[in-house]
Amino acid sequence: MPARPADQIDRDLIIREKSNLDHIVATLGLKEITQGTLVRKLCTYTTTNPTRQALFEYDRLIRSIYTLKYLRDPQLELNIRRFQNRIESYHQLRAAVTKVGVGGKKELTGKNDIETNISNQCGRLISNVIVYYNSAILSRLLERLETEGNAKGFEALAQISPVA
Image (cartoon, rainbow, N blue to C red; front, side, top):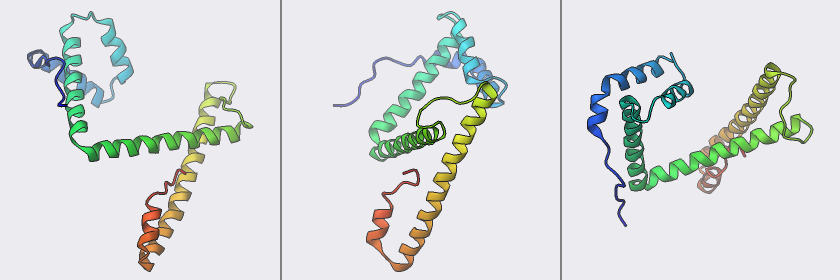
């Protein structure tokens, strides 16, 4: 069943507010404001504010284009699923590292924000070292399999993640 649009994008509104939208994009690009701060400011505007409406319309346009690409391209869907699985695997590794560092419990360590941040960054570093170490081992194994011409081993190796 073909996808049907639920509503129309108000392109005229986006065009009318282009200078304001360009200013917002430039401000974000120059990192003069964070996305979170921008969203908080936009939420203080009334829902009838033209700049806010135009930004939300533009967001709908971008999301619609992405959704259409996703629906039409099975390879894109597969790549996104793989990427999401990779992220989930990394988060599981981070949780395991945290549990080891905190005596089997998943909890924040540190008496203040600085200590908690240091603990978190140490956990990230340890996780990244594990991924790097596993990647180095898999790379050496890949080189050996290519040298030997072992296609079966190469296929099996392609299924292994350095995060695992």
